[in-house]
Length: 401
Length: 218
Image (cartoon, rainbow over all chains, first blue to last red):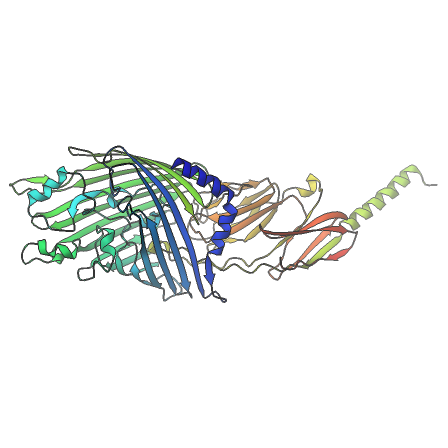
């Protein structure tokens, strides 16, 4: 990994002009400029060095090398129509969950903006959620870290595959390591589910609402409309306020079932998927000034769990980035997640998962406009009999074109 | 017979006349400019990052300048210059200054800008600053090209060209230029369209002469 990064750095340094030319040449447009399409990409080489079971949405139980190529096709047709296609080639949407390699379209959307200003936009396709403020910086070039904040990646004991038979069976999951292939996080990364949205900006206010085929916690398999249709959709919205250039505040809401269609047979008699929802309220705040940037988000979520009741959780993080020089930046993040109590089936109540805190720091270096390196260290602690990913060291090199 | 004092005065007057005429020459002509680059699709992938009215970037121009052995007094810094940001574009698109000039980067938009350069001539990152806020002014004390970007608005492109000659001119958007008050002598005349398109030719300027030099497409 280090050798690859060094070689890449040397090569990119020598080829900056070539990459600049490539940047300029990866576009097509009509003679009058009415149509224009730009191809761009991110090539990531990531390594995860894990002291035990990996945290969050990192799969496997050993050190991991995770290359990824993301290609973006931004197209504008006249002043009113825009589209985006994002294709990815990697070893799984989440690091290591498809070690044999995978290629797929993560995002594809068509947007219509009827007016000259941004008061109204209509969009359909498969795209990142409107909830929260992390989506804007979730790609490897803009994310000061290598992983996502805890609300977007900490796996809980909830599953979308089947209803638990009893509170005991549900709570017993706490004593085994995360089964990441079937359990859910509160919000699954950028949540590229499929549907339609309306959004816009009016003076200092932003609004956005979307209706999609799966919930915020749904895994990438469920975002695909071939696997999950819109019979039990999720509705989400965000209202934002920008008092000035420095501040951006928002409140989000999401409501919809988190079960996959195949879970229907495991539900209690007479119940439907739409009786069991994920309900999320979120607040986000960001501030920037000179070389400082700060972000914070808090989410309160209720999962309606068959045969158990309401399982509540709250998660938040505070994140700061500071540019030490034109090329060097450092970042710091503090995350926590708390779990509420549910009926344990024996007349008492127990917290339904292990509370967790995580502290993270990262150092980044931009060699030029095309090459960036990041090194991250995370320390996590959960209130349980065992730890998952107590210490994580991750390194990432990104080539942008 | 002329006295020595009168002779010195006469020689001084002749020298003065020669100096005036030597700085009275002109080079003018037309540059075939590069085609305008099409506007990149502004990255508006995610809802909360859209909504800004983006202006057109400045039309392409070229810079014509004379290179030679000019004294430091002649090449001294220009008055402080500005590279502003208006309608989410750099204004002007190309700023030409003499070595040693201080440049300010005022933001005239309602959103933040974060101007930076990774160019070897001058690496800097001004951080985020808003309209009315005064970011650091920077001294450009090395000749060369500085490519400017905004970290927040990826489509923005700007250039600062730092020269160590007092004789330069930007063409109009129709490609015409005129360099005035040029000294007599042999020099290299350069036509800078962008970093990859720099043409040059040797010129001999005679006192009070007007040279016409056109620069065809590269």
